Image (cartoon, rainbow, N blue to C red; front, side, top):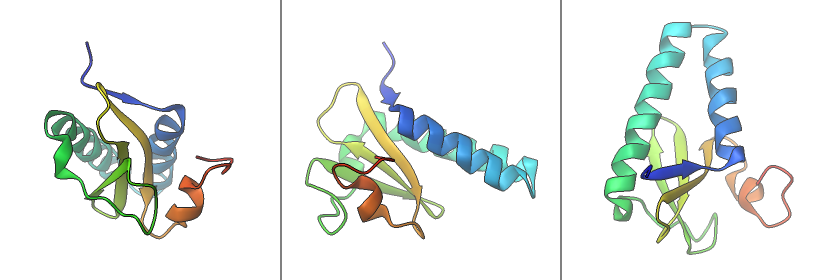
Length: 103
């Protein structure tokens, strides 16, 4: 069994990140995606590594920073459930709020 799952929104986030970076530098896009995937695998092994950000989401969510991206996941899920991968410059709180079209 896989140690983590990505929600459809998280899968879309990865595709958007790859497309955005690859438009300028395809090699950099591959490196960023590989680093994000490696971080997710590490989080699945040690889910307590992330931090709660009650200013951004409810306490079930944890955040782990990689480059300028938050890997957002639900603590206590097995397999680890990654809900979003969001650039820190975005309105993370709004994107994670209940009823958000993108959440």
